[in-house]
Image (tube, rainbow, N blue to C red; front, side, top):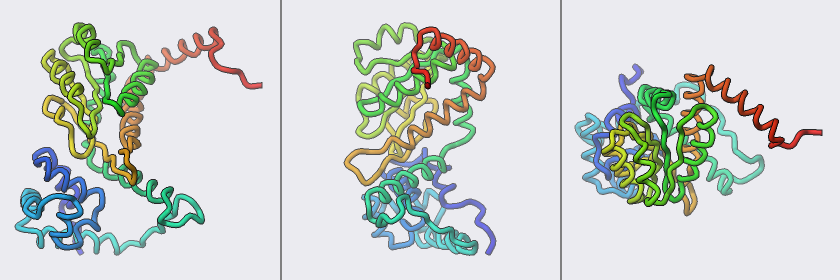
Length: 290
């Protein structure tokens, strides 16, 4: 069987930004549970994705298909092609623990989130973000929401080792004006916003964009409203079998981004790290091993 010119997942990624919010919800559901999600009926897919059947029809047409049967035919062709090669054994995360145990269910969901997240990242866009962060002529600011502010704090703590002019913005809006005074056109604002999207995050993004800042948004698969004012966006999949969303995929994006910046600035970063270690040693900051 000849390989398909473009996979269904590739079609979805290429058209994701042009989709409506309900279509994005459907597309995210498809990619996260691909290919099982689209092997059933159109009504079953709509029900599982919590969208209407007309939304499914509109999405498959935007992907270039005449209708759902043609779309499903391509998916089945992909599945058949995959089954030609040997199927790898799925090793469980905890030996002797039932498949239904929370350890396995949660880990499987996290791995699925990582695969879906990394599968839809545009490498050129990611590299452009890293280049912005590595540019010493640009100051970097970061802020997150109620849950994701910890991600922003972690990012700033690590980035300060690599370069100067990295600032964590307070969640309190009364602290923004002094920070915005120092935000010049071309500076970078990294902001985190996942559901439920927060008004204060959107307000800050709008104010920073109006000042000419380059806004980089890390959001979820449904995409924060702040995306309208962001130059770059990275979307992470966050659903897990829990009352809370998972930030694991976001953490991977942050750490990979920092690794990319480190690679671009290694000579200066290495010199800063050596000076920092000397300061830690003088301050006797870390406990010495016996």
